[in-house]
Amino acid sequence: MSRFGIDIDLQFNSQKLRRRLGEALGREVKKIFDVKKSNIKNEITQIIVRAIATSDAFKGLIGNFPNDPERDLQAHFGLSGGAASSAAASILQIAAKSVRFTESKGRGIFSVNINAINDSFTEFLNVPGGTFVSEPSGATVPWITWLLVNPNVDLPQGFNIVFSNGLSSQEIRTSRSGRALMRSLDSVTSGGITVGGIYAIPSIGRGGKQNFIFRAISSKTVQNEIIQVFVRNIGLRRS
Image 1: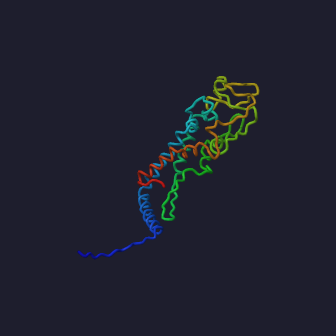
Image 2: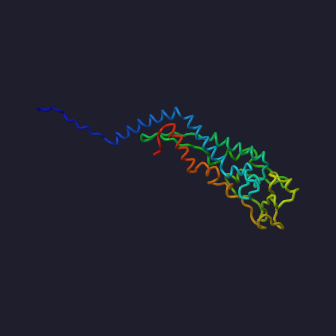
Image 3: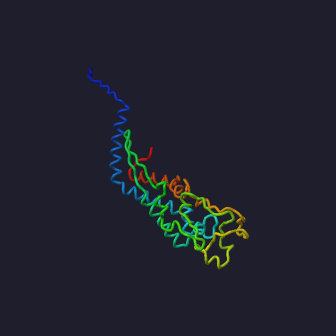
């Protein structure tokens, strides 16, 4: 039996085909993202705010570690419970409204960059109560700057913090936090503090490029949670 057929060979420019497929996929992903954008942003904001709020530094700021020399930032900064809680709430509010997306397209790829915190920390540094004047010394205490940007505290050598176990009841009453005072240690050694030492903020509360906010939101756990937000809402994993 005779057979008649036509063989057709189709040749594709693979690079051009991949680009066109990528562009088509990018457009579809963009459509899905536009629909889900608000929900994605809300979920990511919650993740970032929760990461900051559960960090040791934040909990130390609101008084979760009373009389712990390494974590009681409320006492180190000389803050009352009310002042610390108000400032902490402002920090979370600023962090929440700082979350935004920057979208870009190129080479057939739709990408989203999540901008969470501006590294100038301008809004954070203007938190009400972030700087106060200590009485009766009249010294300015820029604790929010120490916490986020510059941990260098300008105190003369021989001053340090003394926690309540080294203070009299009268001194405790004059303490804003009720747990510690900054004082000259020329003739006093208490709680293992060395006379003549130079005061330094505990490591969990030291500002700079790796301050507690950046450490909290750049953790692997937070990154994976954010990836899962996109997986659930768009169905695509990052490359």
